[in-house]
Amino acid sequence: MALGWVHTAALAGSALTLLLAVLAAPVAGQDRQQAAAAPEFRQMCIEAPNLEARARVAACSALLASEANGVDRADAHLIRAGAHAALGATANAKLDYEAAIRLYGTLIRPAAPDPALTFRRATAWQALATADPGAVDRAIADYDTTIRFAPRHAAAFLNRGLLLATYKGEQNTALADFDEALAIQPNNPLALFNRGYLQFARRAYGKAIADYSAALKLDPDFALAYNNRCLTRVVAGEPADTARADCAEALKRLPGRPDVHETAGFMHLKLEEPTRALEQYEAALRIAPSRAVALFGRGLAKQRLGDNAGATADLAAARALVPAVASSFSDYGIE
Image (cartoon, rainbow, N blue to C red; front, side, top):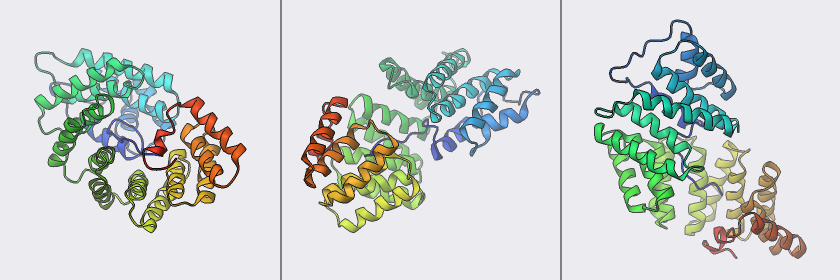
């Protein structure tokens, strides 16, 4: 299932556009003039919103090979890291995030930190949080500083809320951060999406659906909002046709995402449609053969269809990958 956070440092789709907009903000006391040797590479690396990831890596590499100034160099590493991540080059992404953190560290003045720079460094720390638990506290500290010096920085509230909810379990504090982000930017679909996810986690399904619906009103092509609203609707027991319609919209927009197929599979299991559930879980596994949720869901679908041997194999394989995978289903009434 694709329930999960989308944040301004995700560097994918619309999130990249939002981060590029953040990077366009002026940096106090810093020369943001284009490097004379490579203005076109700066534009392609840092400013172009719709550049393909490989082309962005090339542009940022060219900018870094030029005599770009300190802010541009740090930004180029941050943007190239996201492009590497989008291409699955996680080792290269990690190196660039670390380089960006070092460069921002040389530019931030401890006595009077520029919130534009502390926010940038925070997004780099946040990108490293999954593999480095210490990065979580560093990111939160940088978001705290950003908010202290820029109290209406909506993206800082949004990203801090994500960290507090995901890594600290502080749902109430995270909700307050999402509410504050939306008070500053009421038409921010990412903030609405993430608050919707948090409401789902709190089992406030009506509020979650309201937030996903508001996000979709602002961005009708927000595929993951359709996906998450589909799952929320079927868990909440809303009319089946509304869940089916949302899952169909998500699949139409993200046919290559295994987690979106998993959501559709879960919906069909919940609606007692095991044949259609099996189709969706097999589609997920064709894309990503080692996904525990898809294996477990396929096992449950086979079980319901009378294929006990196949079910036993899939369920065992899923548990070998993620021992607690069953809770992703049993928590929502599927055994």
